[in-house]
Length: 257
Image (spheres, rainbow, N blue to C red):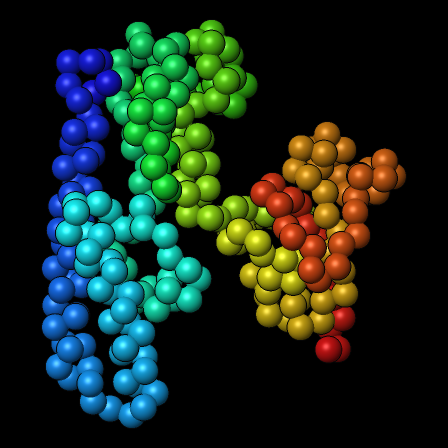
């Protein structure tokens, strides 16, 4: 509860410490194995074990201070090397502060205050009034907008939580639309138009020619691909185009490839 009577961050920090202790146990046990059986095997295996031991030694020292692994900088190669451990304290942290509905107008200020006081790598904060969110979820889109306007809120917290979760995980969505359905697809940051085509179907990636792209808001304003093309808002992009969150994409491909 963010009413001021309790310190929600004390509970968050306590949980983080438990995760760090758990990860420290995993690292310590793995190091014990590497220092015995890890000295055996093929030259390639011994080299791999030696590299792993170096990074785990550093992580052990960091975890021994009680700090989570998300605050320890790692190179891309080091990330790949320890990915299989799935360390708990390395995962992004999204803290949801539950408040009473009468404090909802203060939500932006509460979030900003908490974010400034407890800033850290891969950490975000959102404030949520659960009863209000339940009421908003039961309304139509138009009624929900009116309700939010009455409360002086730009966006329901549920949508913000989803957006923050995607951002912390380095994920985003693009859309495909046709006569039968409109669908969202999830990609990782830095994904290209070719990656997007492959997410839909491997045949699209294999025969990729180009992608026709428009932002979702422009698509809604136009009402159709034909109108978007008439207004000059539909762009042709190649394989290396970096897809952006909310892009609407039509993939043109050669079926014979």
